[in-house]
Length: 163
Image 1 (cartoon, rainbow, N blue to C red):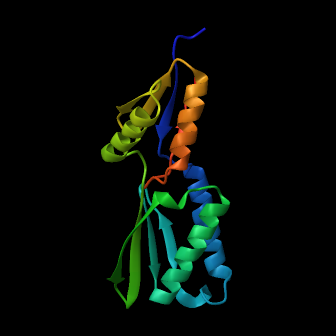
Image 2: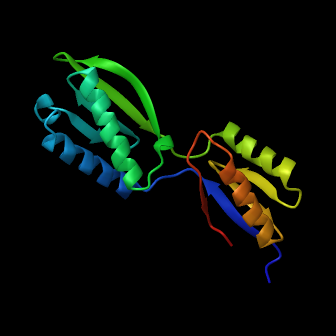
């Protein structure tokens, strides 16, 4: 029997699901009556999504479609960090949406502090952009997961490497 059990708390998203979300969004833009003739583009980069459209109204509609498609594909809306709306050439509007990945240092500190204050038999340690939680009891780890799920964090959290 193992002397200690652990799991990692990470903030990540499935890249392929995001690609599918962008594809579905582009498909809906080309077929919807109100968006069809706007020459709107939604492009996925390495760590950002760029929306290029002709007005604020269509930008809001495209954001709405993107969010709906993301939710249907089990992607958290917390991965999107919306940038400012910028004017682009030809009286167009451009918006860059940064994709959030990894747990920031201050959020990691908040998670470990919460675990330390609430659960005495559980240890949390920050490891890069993840938090490792360890304990001698699997039940304590399950309790820690429930505690973390109850809180509202600024990033999407997943639990991995449960052993």
